[in-house]
Length: 315
Image (cartoon, rainbow, N blue to C red):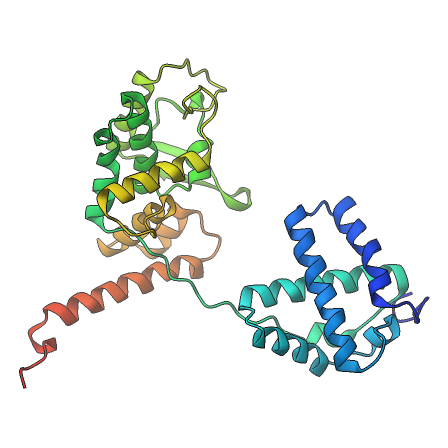
């Protein structure tokens, strides 16, 4: 029963292999995540050895106070760990304690009192309207085979014209062609949304299909790689890297930046924030609200640069 340690003298390092086997076998964590969790909890145990001045047994772990947990997080921050790394470390510690609670009755109420550090809010970096148009036109100027240029134009048109993620665009099949006026898209969390399809986007996809050398059956992937298989996201990212280098755009000009541009430009032209939330498939309006912040920042810069009263007077 939790709270009644069955093996209080068991040292924490000896408990790690069983927990890691559980994560690998039952939880099926990815190898990289598993290794990160192992490092996090091993580091915690090493820190506690010095912090507590004695062996880190299950009994010692059960007596940790909130101040001990905060001291560990503070030590990691001093070592240069950012908020996301600290969040992952705390998540790993909680996973270990949950397992140890079931296996050995280890309980530490203080752990529930420790709040993970908040990550700084990342502002989206959309491309400009001019850059978006240039990116969509650029594949035809690269010297690539006509069908590949048409394919890349079609995909970028979907990202910018419909606000799709790469995965959503690449999930389209032959059954989706010709594209209807509204497209049903399944995004993150299995959430389904209806996205209007602009005539220019439908035309771009039809132009690609007409040039594609491979037969596209209803169950086949709509967008095909050079050898005929389903196109992967890395190929789209690589194509975007070449295009932005050709156009002199920054590294922030990624395929996802076109989705950001879709939202930001809609908002700049009077789009309703809640309608944009529905078009993007966001579960929460607060996620979409960040685009209003981006747009407000752009307006402030334009105001400062152009308004007569904002201009600095000569000394």
